[in-house]
Amino acid sequence: MAPSIPNDIYQYSLRSAYHAGLKDGGPPVAFLTNHGTHGFGIFEAEEDDDGTEQPPRDMIQVDSVAYAFDKDGNAEQADKQDQMPFTMVTVFNPVQRVKLPSGTTHKRVLELFAGRSKNTPLSFRITGAFKYINTQQETYWDVRGTVFGFCIPVWQKEVSGDGLQCCFLSEDKKRGGRVLDLETGEGAVVDYGKCGRFHLGFPQDPEYEQLRI
Image (cartoon, rainbow, N blue to C red; front, side):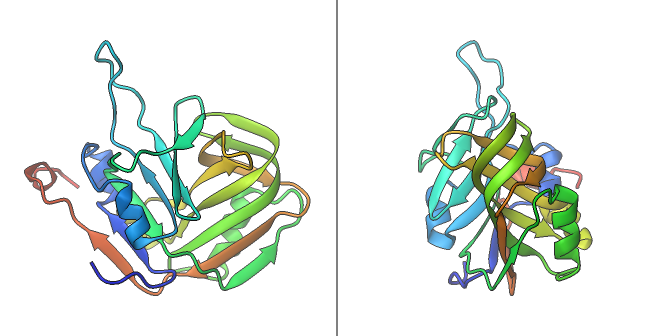
């Protein structure tokens, strides 16, 4: 893979392939530190002791450390050997900073980015206070922490997902999850940078070639 360049995005597999059922394998967490400082992803599905498949854990990488969220939103540092059938990482080097008014919503953040980067993906980080954050795992009220992820243009939906693809990590790094909605509190800021190049790695196993995507 090409050398890591700030704000380039390195992605493994297609979001449409993940939704079509390719939810095993993929690069390990150790891949992240080779190609980025920040990222977002989904771990492969796991089974509990009685063989029941558990919901896949989401991943956020912040300052070169990857965290995994369980179904209840508890965060822990991810094992370097844990694999991700879908992931996006970048060497995050923001070139713009905007102070967000209190009450800024998920929709408003998406509109802000659309006005600055309609057709180019970008990486972003929101830090500070949040009135609430609704994640796939849990809803948090009056919390501080970091949201990191990527804003995906419409044309790239089947490749990388739709709109804002991001996770939240609380300030104490104990809670979080995949963000569905949010509202900022006082003093929150967003830093972001446009992607200059997009690098896509394809799965090499036969299962990928049998998918209808």
